[in-house]
Image (cartoon, rainbow, N blue to C red; front, side, top):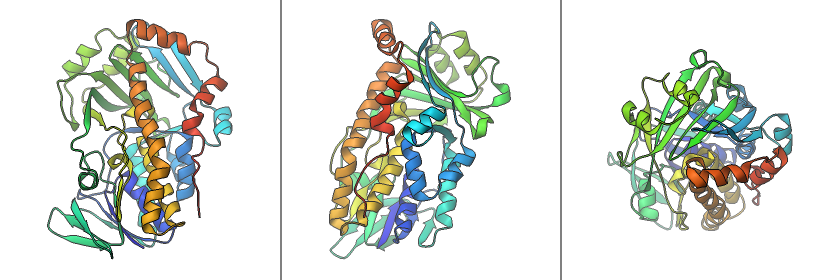
Length: 389
C-alpha cells in the first residue's frame, strides 16, 4: 500500500521504517524545515530494544547509548536511599535486552538515517498537516500551505497537539498536569565530585524531583528538574525562569542543589497527557504515539510506546485488509498504552510524595531485592506479544 505519515518524530519515522520493511510505500511529512528532535535524554527499557531489533537499528542504538548500572531513588530532602534496581548483565539476561539511556537527537538520527537508506520511504519537510478527507478509494492529507497528498492510508504521528487527532477524536486540548520540567545537559567533566556517573538517579521530594543520568557513552549528564506549578499554563522548549526553579528546590539536599547550580540556561516543558480512550481509528486513518496516547514522563515510556505501536501496526497490516488491520492495531495497543498512561500519573505521586505519603512510599519499597523489583517491571519490560503474519 501507499501510506502517508503525518509527523517526522520518533513515532513517525519508526512507523515509516516498520512499514517499508514490510513492503509498503511510505511518505513522511514533517512540519518543520528540517528533521530533528528537541529535548535531551530518553530512557530505553528492554521492551523497546525488541522493537529496535525488528526495525534493524538495534546495534546502531547500542553503539551510541549509555548503559547505566542501576535505577536509584533517593529522598531529595533527607538524602537516604529509597530503592535501588540493578541494571547490569543479570537484568539484561532476565529481560532478554538491556536498559539504556540515549540522547533524543541521537535516537532520532539513527531512525532518520535508516529511513533515508530504505527504498520505499520518501521524506518531506516543511509540510504541516492540517486535516484529511477520505473516500472508498483512499485518503487525502491536506497541508497548511494548501497542498495535498494522496494515499491508501494515513497515520497521525503528529504528537501531543495532533491536528489529525482533532479530526479523528475531537477531544480538544491535552490535560495540563501542573508539573513543569526543566531540562539541561552538562558535560561530564563539570559534574560535581561524588555524583554517580553510571546510574539513573532520581531525587524525589515534596512536589518536585531531580533526575540525572549519563548520555552519549558517558560524555554528558542529562538533568531533568520537575516541580508543581501553575505559573506556566502551556510551554514547550522555552527558556525557564531560574528563580522559579530555585524557589521549588529551596529545601533540597546539597547534592541536588550542587547539580542545579551548574546549569545557567534551562529549557522548560509543561507536562501534559490525556485520558486513555478508544477511537484511534477512523476509516483509513489511525493515530500513533503521542497523538493516540500522550503520557507523562514518569515511566520513561513515551518514545518506547510509539515504536511498539509502529511495529504492531505493520504486523497487523501483514495479517488483514486495511480496515480490520487498523482495528486490530488499536485493540492490541489501547489497554497496554492506557495502563502506561495511568501508571505514569501514579508514579508522579510516588516521586513527589511528602509527609506521611513519603513515609509510606519508603516503607513499601524498603528492602526490595532485585528479583522483586524485576518482577514488578515484567508487565512493562517483557517483550510485548501480539500476533504476526
